[in-house]
Length: 101
Image (cartoon, rainbow, N blue to C red):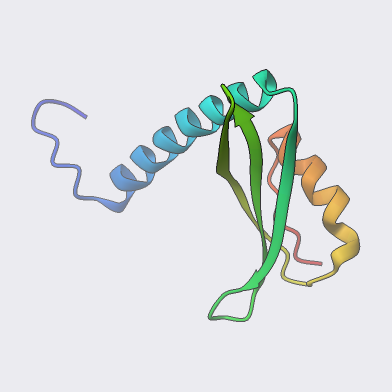
């Protein structure tokens, strides 16, 4: 992307979103690592296509202030809750978390 770049393609937008998400996730990871205590909040939601998703947040103390941070929206199309430990392990390892079987 040179000086004449318009950033109007979906590839440009996706690239910028990925870069922003990487920086935000890195910042949240550092906050979680520095926190003595944290908890995960996990909620199941269905989108308009009736695909099941787990929305994962982390709640923690950061310099004695309570904070809530979005971590991940994990697609679980089969909706099997027994996959939760596998999906969370996958997330923490930085692997793709979509399971379709």
